[in-house]
Image (cartoon, rainbow, N blue to C red; front, side):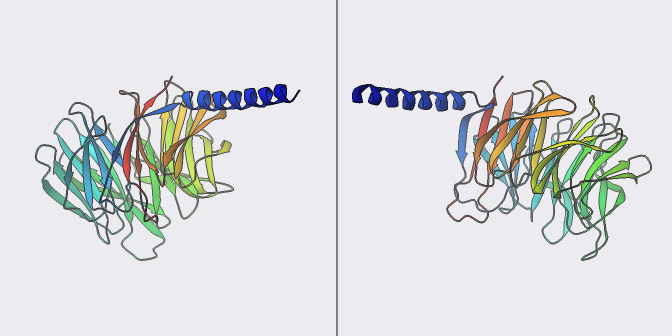
Length: 341
């Protein structure tokens, strides 16, 4: 009897171990490479990719550099000369980058993709941060403050990337905004308005805000992604960490579900009908069952404050930057994941 009991317990333990191994194998993101970054401290902000040149760029916000990697995550070089780099736009037709820079001042820098020298600079209001590119009119929309401390409004500065010059701005309510998304026709922009806790809808022809959608039950809207065929906008908040789905025809919230804390980047994998939402410690993966229904798939372990990420559908790869801000013993790194079927 005793022997049978021992065998039974052993079988249960073995079954549990096998189940855990099976669960690990079924994770939608498989870690394939890790590049440690010794000597780095603080936060990272955003990635961009050069597919033809097989390069990955990362804004090392607190290190005051843009780091260059190959597509397997191996570090190639470091570009210096920035105050606090945030967003990066790579322009393959001219082999140049535009970097938003906002350390107590505001500017964007034009950088050579050949020798990595800073070629030109445009001064902007203080508080420069995130940005979004419009492939239709070739404008880069760069968020900044309004030029006044504690102001009630802030600006989206419009950069003509062909001429590399400031061609106008858009005034938005509140003193800050975060992620933005642009419609395929290039005429409409959605933006997370942090202060009012709303999604703002901007007509890019008139440069006026035409709608404001409240985000109920949460604060600090941060990351955003657009599913235009299904008329859905995805927004994630930090307080509490929630994933919201908006109907872009009505501006109403369709549903919301919990997600990774301290999230910063979100990506919609249209081919697999998945959402990847990176935050501290984990990346939440959600499955889109239909336009109105979303199911939790996994919280993939990524690392401390690994809120910066990039999904590259052409490579079936997901990149995450592990930060060290606020944790002296943190091991900073860039991690490369293969996206699983």
